Image (tube, rainbow, N blue to C red; front, side, top):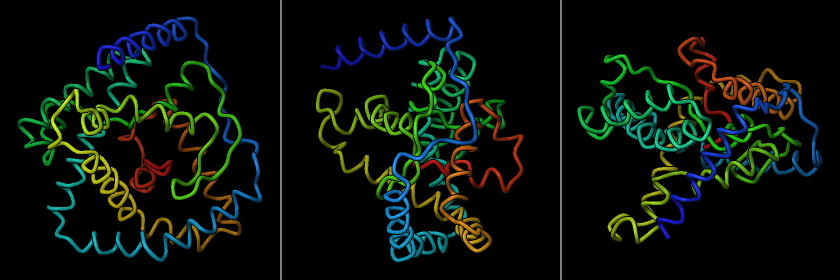
Length: 258
């Protein structure tokens, strides 16, 4: 089964590179048609209710932890997440970014004590934007499709929803924790959800003020989040360097969910 997955990944890599060489890029815009706006607005309202009742309080509790613990946890989670970025760097045929991502992971996983520290940055391996399968599909030529909101997961597009499914198969962390052929059961699937949950809490804790400010100053909060999401996705697809953004912009680096 593992060999079959490797073959499928190799086939996807070959097809992806062919499309890149053929310059099969889709034009992107800051707008997207709504699939079912009424339903999406209802789901968005429920999501915000859950956020205020559950996720925001948890994020505030997490923020109460000492800064070194939060920074180390954020670094460790980001280090694991870089494996998914590496898979998509390869599928996009971006060998330079793939080398940078692999270098960061190797250095931070060893010298950086499992990613809790980030010595790779000081060694010239700069932190780049995350990559996911939705971005890969865009590079391969897929249009964004319509916009809608998912329960708990938040804003997305038709392409990015497909990308969410692709991420699970491309993420080595998911494969390690869900496939007994790869590792023994000491790495259970619960470990994957702990990792994803921690990533989500870390993101929310970094954006408490940003989200509150956006909600307070928006005439239509739903429309503001939609606009921000679509602009953020376009920046990611174009591989805009996160180091070139202002601090306020980088705070919203992962607004498109995990």
